[in-house]
Image 1: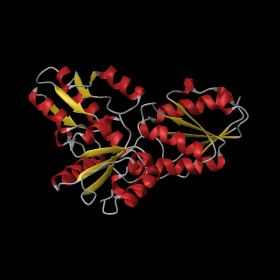
Image 2: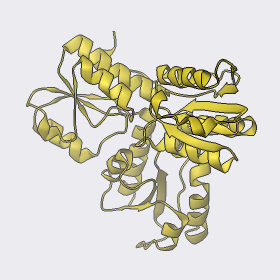
Image 3: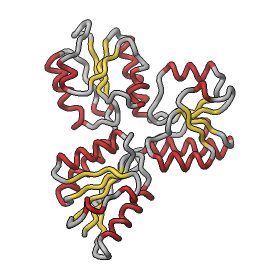
Image 4: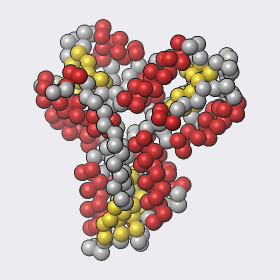
Length: 309
């Protein structure tokens, strides 16, 4: 069996930054450090931070007055920020800067008097946070069918933003449908889409040219991990999502000559290594591990000023 590793894979700059913020906060201020929602969608990462003294909550009301609260990488609504302020909480913001950029864009459009279409997945924590920036002026669409059913007040005063963890491929058909129905809509800029999401999807398309099976390491709640599975299947491979090596069913790879392995943007490399080792054991020693050429994504995000040395 040939085991082919995707590049890039795993942590993106926004996830790296969010985890580092919680780690540094625990080191500098000591536990407990409260975190609003899971800092990233990965059980392994969350449990490791919990072991160090992080406490994960959904509502600032759960946090004792005066305590330190970290906002997760997915971002929060202004209402959550106000609730934290009203409780006198000290706040560190680990929101991915790409998400913050979408929030700023949505707020700007609302101030211009536009209605806003948000392309995203209902119930996703990033979507909830973004909609909170213009709750009375925002419409959520998840599909081309949603566009057909969309009712707006003034088609000439319409803007569009997207959930960052969707790719250009994910949004293309919906954006085209919006432009066809509302020719004057202000469409999202390409740089609103997460570079890491697009890059990881491109690498999976390349994987599927050689691999009959693609294993994606990620969490069921992770939007970008689920999209990687879908991309693998659409590209002609069998795609499966696992959180740990123990989730891998040997029947998935039985008889496969080449198995691709990748990871969502919130999955650590240690979990990828576990999956590779399990595949090698299943191959009974007849395995060869190789990787796609390395990719330097060239992106880093600055820490909040409270944590800069």
